[in-house]
Length: 139
Image (cartoon, one colour):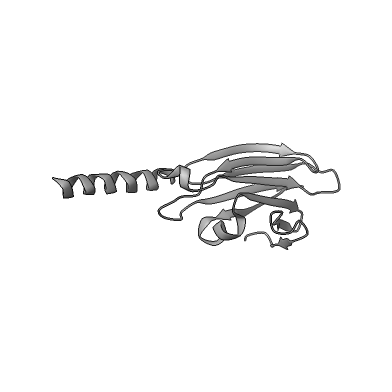
């Protein structure tokens, strides 16, 4: 009986993990994601972010305006992957803004992105507000 109840508990934990990673929610800090329009031309930026279980939705943001959301990284298996689509000037680009397997140690509790025409730039404000890492658009 004891081994059967341990198996049942393990099965429940794995199912919660695969359903969205929140089975041990109190053990992982919430990550706050901030995506900011950095087009100095005053152009609006369309942003639509989602992961496999959550669609954050579409918003059109003006210069220096943030698109913000929060989520909790998975505890058991690092499987959180948020990607966003960006529209501006009749162009569409996409980019992975959070990949738990690569970003969990670097991001901790906040993730700040500035979106430019040439690509997104991540600013690690918790380590150094002047630390900017820019990337080309995904192809």
